[in-house]
Image (cartoon, rainbow, N blue to C red; front, top):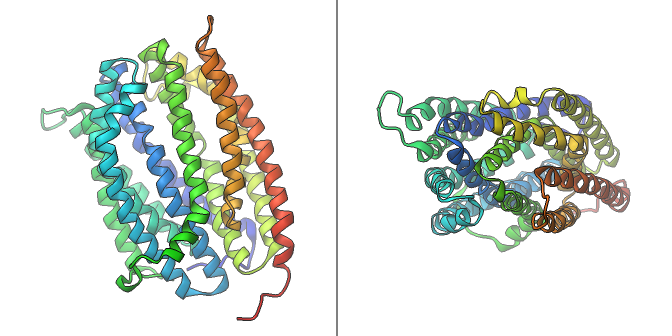
Length: 453
């Protein structure tokens, strides 16, 4: 357990963010490695895997409910020096992780085909996507246990084991992918199903290592069967903080689905280019995401310890660092976005679509970094509803014009990319204003003495 309520805030931020950044980078390599091998199967396979991979946003929406709620409540408990409450929260999180994992398997195998039939541009894309989903769903179900333990560690200020485990999972995926996708050594290529299965096996192996770390290290919490019996009051606390971020990720699923639907008329090449460009963009966001992920437990522990100035200072340092990192990445995407694409595919039409996507959307990278930081601060303060409100308004402001434009003559892919840039910039401005209002409402009260027990 690491105390984040004293000492240099920039030093805490860097120490927390660097391991997260490295771990998240390797986590993103999951998808890039899969895409590299799948790209050799053709545009339909790439488009299918990209469309099926969008299901991860639904799973991430559920893991966010558990992860954000667990991290915030444990960070507050650690700040208050209340280990008993931290243990209760973690064990309740574990219980609901098991429930959610089973729910994902049930719904994924029964409804996955309907989703792909809606967004896939042709039967070949739909079949490739369904093959990937069948192999990937068990891995998605295992993510809940992963997130429950990882979030407890984050709340306690322990981040390095998560980095080690994520690196291990990528190494396992690198080992499994050529064997299962291309049939190296076996002569039995499994195609897109092998891509999903390799990720599932990698997640399963890494989860066992994470469990070993969790049992061995002093994170302030332990598995306790007596505390795993459902407690509805604790679940209510988890849901109050976790549901809004979960719904936000569900909105990301809807957002991406709308893009695939709007551009389906341009064929598999456009969908493949967008899919690769979007995955590369996710990896570009990693530095800002790592900073925001580090800011959340740092500010959360200081909320629990009633240090309002340290909460404000955390936001200033995180926002400034994220903006600087994203500005540099914006320059890279304006200069040579194709360098980021050619490592995955060399097909000129796909590279052209993906490069144009990155060059356009890079104009809102700095705004995206601010959004990530604001989201982390809302989590730290235990009120995530404002972030959800801004995301919902952004979805509506994007979907309405894009769906209308897709029915008009002369509709182009650029119309989708620029609409995304404009609406996200407006969302960042709104979210910053909402955060300042939350600071004014919540932080002055922290300076008062804590009430007697």
